[in-house]
Length: 155
Picture: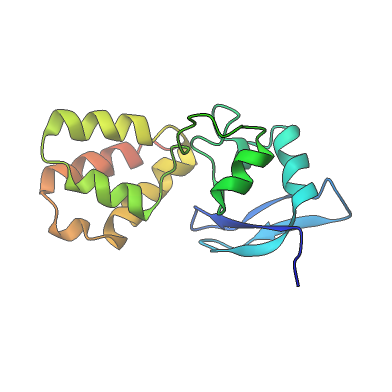
């Protein structure tokens, strides 16, 4: 049975909620939810069109968003992107933090960190994600930099 629902991931460890635009009531996505199935395509499109930053991120195209649309082709369709060369959005998740921790040079590490972390939500998730992917085995200066950045998050 095919539905028109869009699978999404909550990239935060806390629940995210917002008012439903294509129906009645509110939506609550549990913290760290993966493949959350209860959003219709119409709902996700309405949230994007009204500029809900949880979907649109800092640039309106999904960079630094808190909610990730799992299917890349569906994400492009909902954001009105064609198949032209469009890079995937910058998202803070376990995969991107693992790649960050693998960087050897301090300059490259700091450059990548600055590109990856822009919002308070990302700052709040940074250390948790780092320890989920093995920060205890990373160089201590990296962990110090991550903690220092995380402390700048406004609650």
